[in-house]
Length: 557
Image 1 (cartoon, one colour):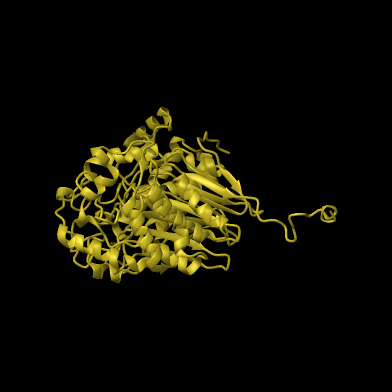
Image 2 (cartoon, rainbow, N blue to C red; image 1 turned 30 degrees about the vertical axis):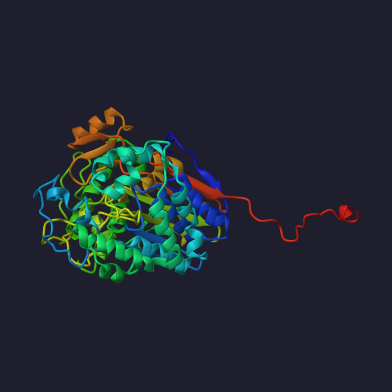
């Protein structure tokens, strides 16, 4: 069994567990559980809170995928990803280059900064639908922590302060954004109080009127008017027409467990299963964790998956995605023969005929009754488009940057089309029951990191805490990113096999995971790459029949 030194400690509980990338959001979810709500109530409450305390990552004007399991046996995926506005066109951007690394960039950064980069949002619709269908508490109840933190303010963490410093030049371009995040012309610093009055008012309107406030109501009209005046594409009709899509999870098997993931338009689930199929016949444990052999094998599996992702994965309403072939054992067998343990190779797609953002968030929630939620949500880049609809406090996503700016490709822009992501909220089942749930932010690096966490547990015997914190690697066929914790002699060994090794401080973001023990206990873990905090509920209510004076001798007096 491999041992890894960890910075954080896991939490153990019996009545519920909430793991998010901010302690106040985890506390908001735990508050819903303590109020008698279930895991969906907790997840939605935590997501609204995250939109306040982790504004650089997630918001009500964003995109996301959520996987939900209920004790009644329902297992579903809510696709609340953004869509291209009706006015969007394949040639709406002017690409900078025909080659990497600037292939996905457009002139003037139009596809990543400002109003033309904004997609029609899905998060608010998705959160409200989850709550209405699977929750037990009212929308106004689960939104109270978010409203409170927006109205009263909260202390900026070091993580948020660093993100603000990084995005400050772009935020300064937009008056409404600068007013909130750059008071007195400089980004807020660690320990400063961040108050978001306009956003608190928007949240109150949503709590009162529901999602209709945005999808055709007063807030939506304010956004649409700003778009029309300032050069954006989204109209009130775009907002009113938006719908979430319920999808069936994709399933695969590995080492005796079932892996359940989200289907296209995200590539996370199918390519995670594809890579596990590639690894299955190798003795991964014998190769060792963090060794030259172990990392080389992971890198080759990643390159094969990314070649297929670029060729064939997209919105299934626009592209015929060969899901069954990609997740089949037979296809893995054919591709596995292309892996050479002695040297790195370039891998082409194996199916007929992509990019995401690091700046996302993830939460994992479970309750004592068996409801489980794994949800990855985003506004895409750090602080999204950096633009804010005046008077709303809402940061607007920049998910149009996920489209290929070149016309004529699988990922090219089309009106109404959903963007392709790498989100991979994942639930592991053993004998039909949840055994583990996990996910993380990280754009194209997401499903690669979920893969490594699963391998860490199932092959290397790590604890959940070790698995989420262990050093990571990533490649999609160009450089091989290797976290600084990987020793130099291992990096040299990888270079000797032909890998272009690039040391990095971290690969992707903070992972949140829950393990389900056979006796019903829950273990929550989060890693050092974000402000992740697991909060669990133990104890419980009093035994039936307990009274204030249980001693009858006292009653006699």
